[in-house]
Length: 138
Image 1 (tube, rainbow, N blue to C red):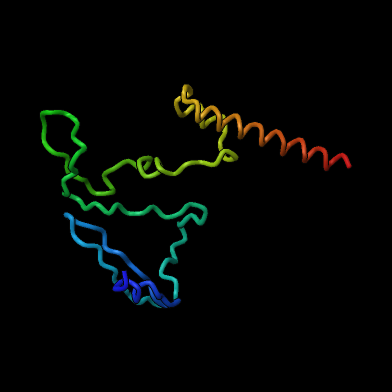
Image 2: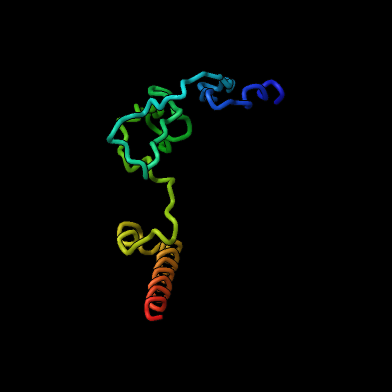
């Protein structure tokens, strides 16, 4: 681990980038210097939504272990733009306070975890509403 230590001491003007493993290669840290000015000046960027991370699996790489049928070819990775947008949000879980009735109707209603989170969100919203009304009466 001592050979990586110099790469972990980054200054404000530098950026640490890790190269993704490809075909069982070794991870190598590369230090690249950037300017202090912001390169992202696009006006269509939504500040509340974090930018979507690119997949570290390159187009054309074989995806071993995903083909569950006994017959058939091994699956090959596609370009990130060829996958649907909802795929990139699967691992982003919502907080219970952010869940609404629409979330339960979109998902499997028989899932006990989702039902519990929705009930928790409804209770929290009810408590907030009651506290707001209580403050307003005073």
